[in-house]
Image: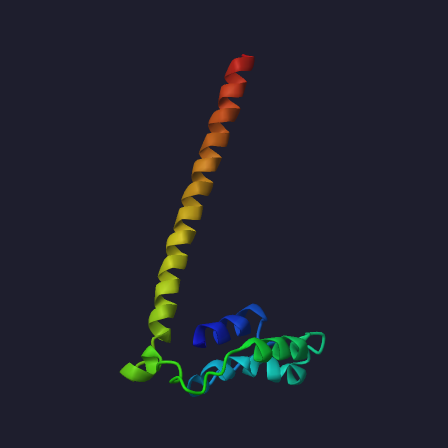
Length: 120
């Protein structure tokens, strides 16, 4: 749920924020819909979605809540590790894009030279 919350905030450029409380389990995930009026996005059909979800949901009170997150269990924040991993992946992808752009330029140059040679 933490990743969902961060993703929504990122892709909305900070305009949408969500909060999920793990101990609330299933109903905690509905928190994003309940507070939509405070976020300035009144066009959402959240009331209809909530009604459909709640009417179609089985009673879950007898089951334990969602398991604790890895961050809570270890007492560590995995966010920094995720950020570093993404930075590493981003750098590798940038290097690959640059390599492909160089290769593309070389192939275009060869194509132009072969076209010039065919004309001569």
